[in-house]
Length: 118
Image 1 (cartoon, rainbow, N blue to C red):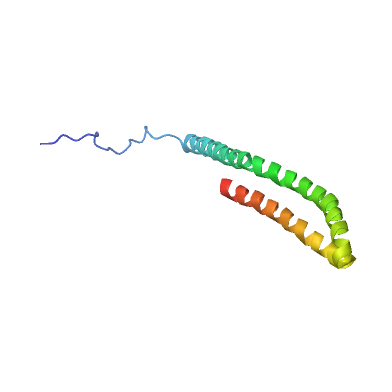
Image 2: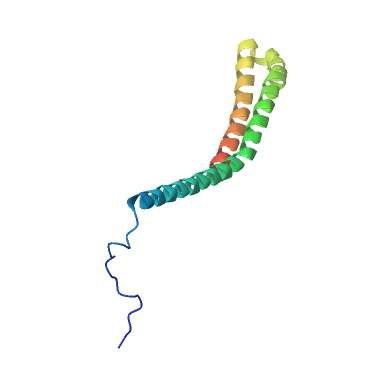
C-alpha cells in the first residue's frame, strides 16, 4: 500500500492563525517585490532594443549627411553637364530625380536594417 507524501491537512486552531495586519503587510511586500521584478524586465527589454537601434541610427545619420552633400555638389555638376543638351528646367529636374533616388535608396537600406534588428 502507498504511503501519503504530504501530512494530512488539518484545520488551524483558533490560536494558530496569523493576524490580518501581518497577512496584509506580507501581501504588500510581495506586491512590491513583484513590481520591482517587472520593472527590471522592462528595463532589460528597453536596453536591448536601444542597443539594436544604435547602428541603424548611425547609418541613417550618415546617409542624411551624404545625401545633403550629394544633392549640393553632384546635382549642380549634373545640372551644368545637362544644361547645353536639354535646357535649364529639364536639366535641373533630371539631376534632382537622380540624386533623390540615391538618397531614398540609402534611407530604405537603413530602415530595413532597423526593422530586421528589432
